[in-house]
Length: 95
Image (cartoon, rainbow, N blue to C red):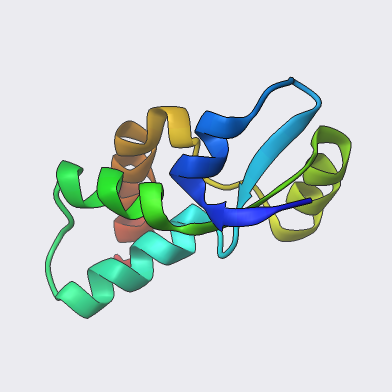
């Protein structure tokens, strides 16, 4: 297991048995960032934040177990669309 910035770790992966896991989850990190900004995040802000978010690498099977415990996170490969859908669902819950 190793740690670092999410983007760096993703680019360094060499096999499919290891995955990058965001710590904290991307959805929570982006919610916090948006809260501190006091306005909706732009696509560039979301993409940039994911790149530098702390993360670790772990075996895929361990990452799947972690996801079962903490719930699913946003997909970094589709982060902007996932974030928009997540925010829309959060807004619906608040209404």
